Each structure stands twice: as C-alpha cells, then as structure tokens.
Image 1 (cartoon, helix red, strand yellow):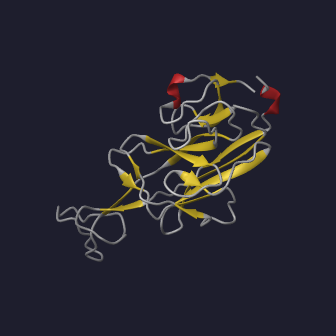
Image 2: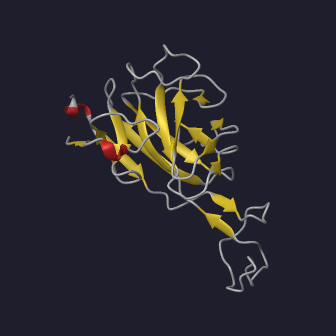
Length: 197
C-alpha cells in the first residue's frame, strides 16, 4: 500500500466560513439579529447574513485509474472533492481555488452549485471551465486552498508523498485528513476505512 510514502498530511483549520446573504439581502454583512424577528441587527440595521463552512474533503494527486471527466471518458485527471455539510445549496461563482497558498486567486470558479449536504469534484487537469482547474496536483507534495469571493480562506490543506492512486481524505467527512483505503469521489468518505501510516 506504500504507506511509508506518507510523510505529512496536514489540515489547517481556518475558522472562517463563506458568507451567504439572507433571503432578503443582496450584500454580504455581519451575522446577527437583535431578536426582533425582522432580520436586522439593532447595531446597524443590517440584514442577517448566515455563515457556512465548506471543506476540502478528499483529493487524489496521482490518478491513473479513475475516469472522472464527463467530457473525456479516457482521462484520469488529478481531482479534489469539496463538501458542503450545510442544509442549503451554495453557489460557487466567484469562489477561488489554488495549489499555491501564496496565490489564493489563482483560479476563479464559474457557475457551479455545491448542493446542500453534498459534494462536488473539481478536476486538476490544466484545463478551464466548469469543474476543470488550470493546474495539476504534485504527488510528491503540494497544497490546495479554497477561498470565498472576498478572498477569505475557507479551507487549506498541505500534503507530501501521495503515490499512484493513493487518496487523502477527511474521515469522517469534515474530520481529520488521513489516508483512505479507497477513493470516494462525489460521495461520503465514511464508507472507506483509514489506513494507518
């Protein structure tokens, strides 16, 4: 299983979350309600804005077996799965992703929707548009970051030494980053088991 190849899997808990405007709000604002039930905060009369957390839930940096590209059934690109554990859909237009944490705006996502309590798989295949990202992941070590449209980091991970078809993921979903026994792109990681380094 090449478990000795795992030198480091680190998840940086950011404590930040995307801001999702309330149903009557078109601007991003502050979380809070004065308790009056009118959706405003007495301090500034601003509409309530709920905040949600998204997670980089799973990734494969050297994919040679999984064909995940709906446009090319022969392609086996590197991939990253994002999880939305919240009870609402989140539109990802304007969110950014990167494999260089010093350059958070490397790639801006388009009109993608991350379903409530669901997953989306992004392809790191040097392409653009839809689920494609204009970079690949390094199997010997790399990073991945997800940022909201304001540039606030939502989740970031760094790793080293992921061999062919090895998968790193959070287990349970949104938990610690570990090596998984099998990939589960687009689904819960809970069906996989954790490989001990």
